Length: 461
Image (cartoon, rainbow, N blue to C red; front, side, top):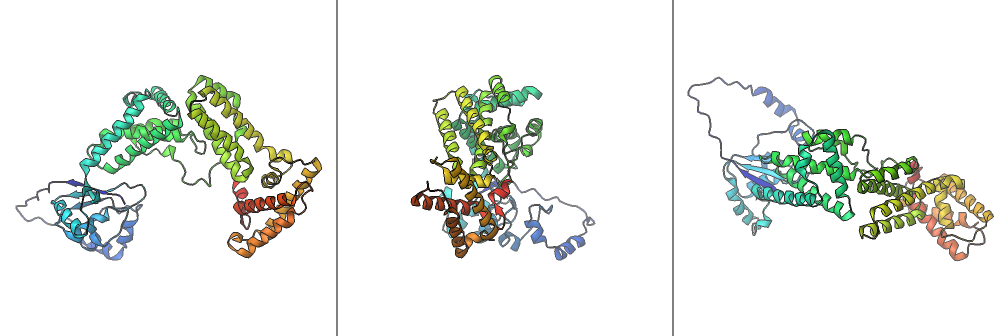
């Protein structure tokens, strides 16, 4: 649960009127709205323009609206009333870091007394409210840490702030290249940047926010640029949005990474001009180009392995390569060359179903039945292909009904169909191999086919 932070304010003195004044506010329409509209629901809706309320009694202690961020206290409270009121701003909601309690009448002095009643208050770490000055102190420390990290890599934030146009873009590119020099460097930066972003959001609104804002925005841009090296994200609008993001807003909307990976666009390695990519590597920022290629390879691999588990050996090769590079066994040139080799091989593997005369899903079953490599003749391989094709046709036509994985009888029927379908395997398959292959095929079907035409292959297409 997030904490709330306290800011004490001197209560403004009331205005003294020396003569009667006719009221200028017509309360009637507001009273009518209170009766006719569902204000409770409207206020709880974070997208509704109804955002500020003056409340007492039930709306302070019995009203649960997690999106509430700030509470202004201008009346004395104590004990359970005080605790429940503070809790209104102390609820978890989306990326909300904490609530803010603005105390106009010195209510905070009653907090320890209230905590004692409820068995807390035995130490500063237990209190649900902390002085906002301590939060600001944590933010300053976080800024010092990330600034020191950047300067160690030759990145001076102030130089980026002072630059304009293409000069600023060049400095951003240089900073990005310096950060992605290794996985450890990248992880450290992303962690430090996330800490600053979390604390910066937590202090808002505050008079010190404008001083921190430029650095927070810069870190946000660098963070998203680094994440965008993964081609799962559309980065077509990145460059044109950089200056606007730095100058106007911390919200880098051009860099948003989708929450769901189910709808990601497939990566097509066949579209990559490998020679042009190599030339760009030689002439440009090598760390960034290598990271971008690695992102493409990794994304393509995830898609390909989801369709065919027999391709996991490519993933193991990629991981070994990354480990060697991070350990310093390979320099950036050899690392990039090895990544290019894997990318070319993946491109060939992606086309193998066509060369084998199979669909992608038929190839997955064929690979289960033939890998590791077996001493099969061309005739045997042709028979295995027919078996894979016929088995899938039978399963999809008769067995893979809606929610088949949830019903024991349906699962048993699919297992029997697999055993029967593989009973025609060539004589090169021993009884032990037959049983093992049948189990692997059944597990593949269970993982990949959801029933009634739904499968990982339907999503991929």
